[in-house]
Every structure is written in structure tokens, then in C-alpha cells.
Length: 175
Image (cartoon, rainbow, N blue to C red):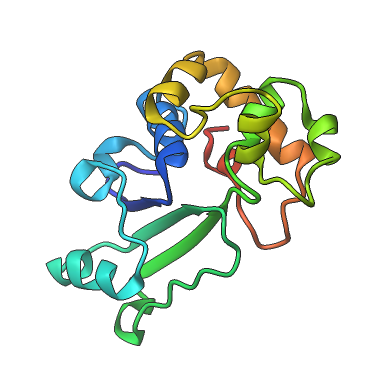
């Protein structure tokens, strides 16, 4: 990807923000911070709000929007006037990005026993005794080894069902 390409990277929550920021700062992603709108990750999840805040600036080049979220059903429908100017890629972290913690702890098989009753974050809190699993401070320390984080992201893609026409964080890693 060339540096003149404009990227909007919208992240859903704290965990996604920490992980994407770590990968971005380490130069592991297919885009750089310099390419990002406002040189930062965005919080704007509503398509209309995104259009009003960012697309009215009259950009000459096409914009790629990467939405990093755990919902497969959350809509992001741009108005017709913007549809040819913006590519939207949904990067799905379902069921939750905290599955990376479960992978790091080698507890995926154990977690499988609880998938019908516990979300990954709840499993981390209740079974792994990690009460701060959703906090920025915990996540920044827990994923301090960038090489390990990259391997966990790749492992997630190997062991988790990524649906056809769906992307995951591993797809944003440089080759």
C-alpha cells in the first residue's frame, strides 16, 4: 500500500484500540499512522456521523475504511454520493478480541466448554482470574511483546472460523 493512500481505521473498543495501536506503532500493518485520517484510530462507528465529520473535507483520493469490530451484523451504510469514493472493509474480531488472551494462555480447548455461557472476556475474568482484562493498562502490559502479539493474531486466524468475504486482524498484517 502506498503512503499517499488515505485510511480511516475505526476501532470498536479499548482492547481493539490497544492491539491495533501496538501493531501500528511497530510497523506491522499494511498501513502506517501517517496514512490515517487525523493520524489516529477513530471511534466513529456511525456511517452518517463519519460522513459528516470526515468525508466533507473534499479528499481527492479514495479512502479505505477499516472497521475493527466484533459484530457481524452492525451496519455502516454510506450515502450513495460516497459509495464510489470509499472502500469499507469490516475486520471482525468475533466473538471478542479477548480471545487473544485465551490463546496466549493456551486455554482455547478449555474455553470451548464454556462458549455457550461465557463471552471470552467473561471467561478471562472468571476462569483465568484476570479481572482487569478489559482495561487499557492491563492490555498494554499483557501484550508487551509485539512478536508474540503478531503470532497470536495469526493463530487466531488459523483456529477461529473466519467467514467467507470477511477479514480479521491477521489480514491487516504486512506479508
